[in-house]
Image (cartoon, rainbow, N blue to C red; front, side, top):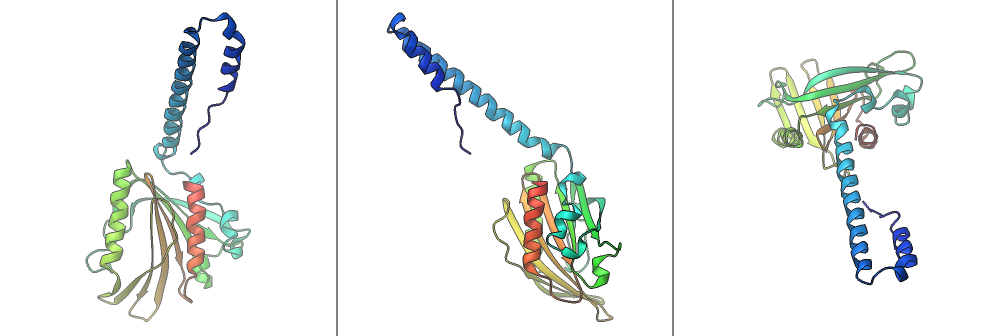
Amino acid sequence: MTTTTPGRARPVLVLRRLAPALAPALVPALLVALVGALVAALLTTSVAARADAAVPAERGVTGADVPTTGQVARIFPFLAGGSRALDVGSALDLYDDTCVGLTGGFRARSVRFAAYLDADGAVPYFEGREDPTFFVYEFGSRRRARAGFQALVDYATRCEGTATDGDTTRTLSPVSVPALGERRLGFRTASRFLDSSVARNLEVYVLRGRRIERSWIQRDTRVINRQHAVRMARLLGRTAG
């Protein structure tokens, strides 16, 4: 960030006008005092800016932190004129040692997520379309958020490949994601059940301060478009970040 010192030229100009009437030793002293005052003001502004930047992380996640239907419709035009359904959660989803069953997850302090319906009130998933969902997880500290993100990375690393438990076979494969936030993670999953139906997902996670942002697409009929998930992650970053 570039910091400027507005108004610095004006005090110097005033001193030049008064210089003939001032003792030579007084001018440097006044300049030092003026510069000191400017530095103090800049430091105060910097501290206030950092305090202001911390406010979003203290207030909890709200509906304003997840994209509107109109914003999402720019990525998925079939959602134009549709609606958004908001809900709350409690933890990051993580899988157990089988890589098939869910654990209790990694608990967060505040969680909000949004799903979307088309103009007819239909769920895109049941219409054979890509079905987007956004999640924002807020933690009590940056350290806690980093630990949660690392738990996701460990899970994705441990569960890469194919695992079977009971009637379900689940495959996880990494997805390349451009630079986003402090850290980012992307992967696809496909779960095949006893009746041969397949549930496909593409997820992108981004770590940003005390928050983890999750952009998730579900679709069973075709392979999910990676670029759509990346655009979702960027949109969520602009909204929640």
